View 1 (cartoon, rainbow, N blue to C red):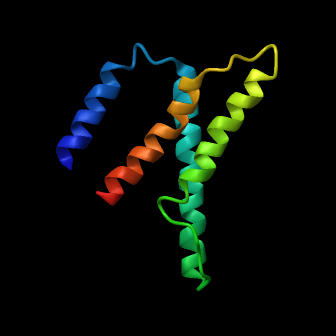
View 2 (cartoon, helix red, strand yellow):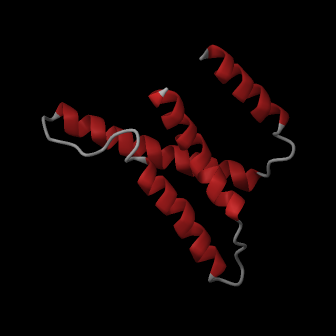
Length: 102
């Protein structure tokens, strides 16, 4: 597990020059949406309510936000639609779920 984290950090730090600031914003948005969903899950558990949220179901709003943003961008002239923006939005939460399930 430690090796995976170290390799990921090294790859991200090495790729920092080639990754635009826009992709970082998308990644932060994905992390924020995912963390917010997991927080709601923990609050529901703490208050004794049944929750359908878990590590996997919290990926759905992240994917919806990433795809929705690109659909929005494709329909407006002053915006640029790029599939890599969606990948940047989803990649870190998806990686977190993969490591968590592993």
